[in-house]
Length: 268
Image (tube, rainbow, N blue to C red):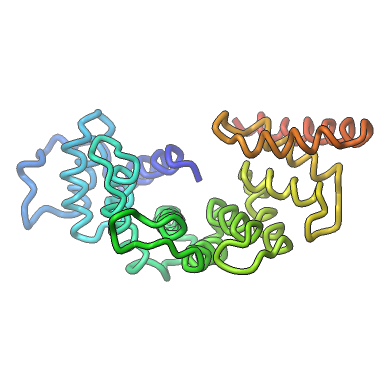
């Protein structure tokens, strides 16, 4: 899930709950022991939306300390991205860990589930790479376990494609292209560009799965058309497949990709 889309979901959910609008009833200086976490969350989100990220971080920190998962998630993202405050991956890690510990068993259909699953994905990333100069060391096996939980329990597409890539690369355990294809397919079906690219590559190459060159090139082409410029690995995979495909494979795959891409255009 893209972070900007998730935050729009925060605002939408907050509006439904009556959290956005009327935040001017108090400011950060009035936060006290009796302030409700939802009230601090409301003020934090409103401050963030208005561009006052320093005040937003203060109010969100108050709500986060009270255990509000949306505040923990948003403040964690701010620390992880250096968004209006100094980047601090360890503080982000701590916030996401608190969320995971407190809400791991929340139902996947509950309103906050997308924030909880996103926290798990972030934790998987931290364990995969480690956080320099902290006690969070590189632990690919643990990263794979965390991704697996978010991918299976919450059905999170980002977790699914991250897990697929770990299986594909043999990170945190044995290489298993069949499992990589399985998780990539689940992510691809949810519209994940990474899932579509990896699935397409596996199918085109016949790597651990029966080779389906046309279907593989179709997925790779869809992923290329939807990828960001920074997704260089997607472009490289598609270009390689295109260069060795037969003319008939290229024509058929492009026609199928055009049909699928029309569906995405209609969703916009």
